[in-house]
Structures are given as structure tokens and as C-alpha cells.
Length: 301
Image 1 (tube, rainbow, N blue to C red):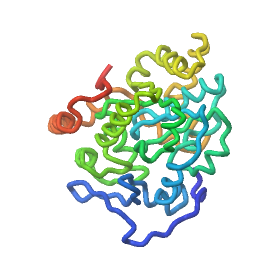
Image 2 (image 1 turned 180 degrees about the vertical axis):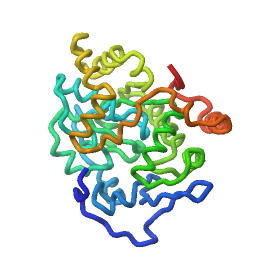
Image 3 (image 1 turned 30 degrees about the horizontal axis):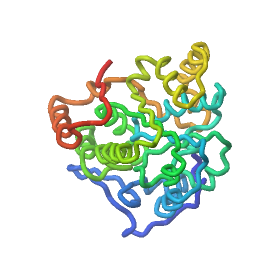
Image 4 (image 1 turned 90 degrees about the vertical axis):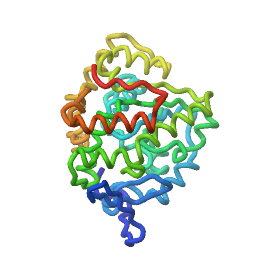
């Protein structure tokens, strides 16, 4: 996104929330209802102020054919968005990035300008998305990735977008805490689990990042079937190639100079970052916070 896409904001000290790890490494954020976004990005006009934008998103009107792609940061949202967009656009390559339809990084007014069918994406809690979803029963694609790889990828992401300065082990304390950039991983997972249990009428497809790596053709067909846009294997093969990690990294560089969004795209990279102690701490965290996950976690393939 360009630096001045939205009105820049000057914050008073009392409006800024400081999120810190156990070693004093901190990031400055702006909070709305338990959701935290980069102070710097809002100040520079890269994203709108969530305190005014999220309430507008909650009450915005949506279309019956809108599809929502939801995932915790670094769980595979970009990759899945590209695949799904090509399926919805009959194989047409994207000239824009998923940020053009990312809530709450854009306003309802910007979303209204997009032609149907629209694929909106978000890292928000359900309560911060358009509540008309419950009335219109829009299709939802939930992307899941094993949380150890998520933590590693999110560490590098926060270094870039939130000026986090600590080590990975220090970041892991941050990641496992109650207040994290965007939101705590386990709270996000529990929130969506609650939504899906309370609203079984919502059409939901679960996509696992690791399955998309291992069996891309099968997973592309699953997404296409869910969207009622099934095609030939040749068509899926074209999408698989166009949406490969190397292709997307270069494509994003041309589109908006955001190739940093694509670092490795690997499964099991956590083994290169976690110490034995880190792994033990994280396993205990999972047992305590999410003992019975509603999705599967694949830590290596």
C-alpha cells in the first residue's frame, strides 16, 4: 500500500498501547476492542484508524455472493487468496494484491468499489467482521497452519511491520502472551471455534496450509467444489503453477513491492528456530490453551 492511501493520524500518548515481551522489547499499537494494529502504519496513512473503521465494517452491507477468507496472520492467507481468486475469476491472474479487500486494512467504501464476486480476507475476530454474514450465510474459508511455523513466520513479519527488535525466543514469549500484535493466536482460534459451533448453518471450508503444500491439486479441487466452480485438472495445474511460492514472491514484487510477505513458505521451518526449551514451553502452551483443537495441526510433511 502507498504511504498516504488513508488520512494520516497524529496520536496522543494516552491513545497508544505498548505491547511488550518479558524482556522489554515492545511494539506500539492502536487498540480497538482487543485488536491491535501498527501505530506507525496508521500514522503514515497506510491503513485506516481501526477505532473508527472497524465499527463501520461491523455494520456494512455485503453481497450474497461475497466469500470470506479468514486466518491468523502468517497462516497462509496470501497463498490461499491467490488460489481462490483465480478460481473465482475463471483463471484470470490477479493484478492487485489481497490487501485491496483486506478487513480492516481498507474501508467499507473501498470494498464497495470492488466488482463481484468479491473475496474478502481478514485476520480479525468474527465480531469485527460484517455481521450480515449471519443473515446472508456467506461462504467462509478458514485457513489453518501449525502454530509453530506460524510463530516463526509471524516473528519475521513483526520485525518488518511492527519494528519488533527481540530474538525469536523472546518473541515466543510475546506470541504466547495475552496481548500480541493483531491478537493472541489461541484467542483467535477459540473465537472462530465458538462461532462455527454456534452457527452450524454457516457454510465453512477448512483449508490446511500443509495439505495445500502436499496435495495442491486435491486442495484446489476442494476449494473449487466449495465455491461451485469446479474445472479440469489442466485448469487446476495452471493455477497451481501460477500460485507457486516463487511465482507469487516475484508477482508481489511487481505489483506493490511487498515481496517481504513471502519469506520461505516452508513446512517445518520451526525446527530451525525452536530450541529444545522453546519447544517444551510451546507444547505446554498448546496443552494449556488449546487442548482439543477443532482443526488438525501438521508439524512436518
